[in-house]
Image (cartoon, rainbow, N blue to C red; front, side, top):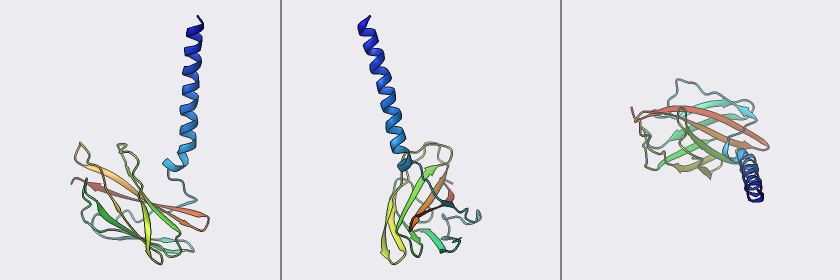
Length: 152
């Protein structure tokens, strides 16, 4: 009887530990923003650079260096946002969880951030992605979600 109670207590403690770890990691796993701006849905980063006006801060420009965006091959990404201190791009599958994929871009010149990203291959072939550009300016975090399709 004591062994069963001890196993139950260990099981409950493991569940509590998993919940606490998830709670602590959730801010870094889920892109949080003070301001979310929807870009023009007609702009397709697979074909052309996209721009969106950020109220009172200027224009954010997002582009990829390889079009169409390849799978399982690194491709260059660039964000131009004057005044930005930090820029990340969170790549997420819209209909399927494809894991954590959020490269941090490095500032190349004033307000221009560059980096490299790699998308995993989807077993179904065609895949809708959302590339959420996360920009920190001062104490404000801005999110701009761009959608595109691979495997067409």
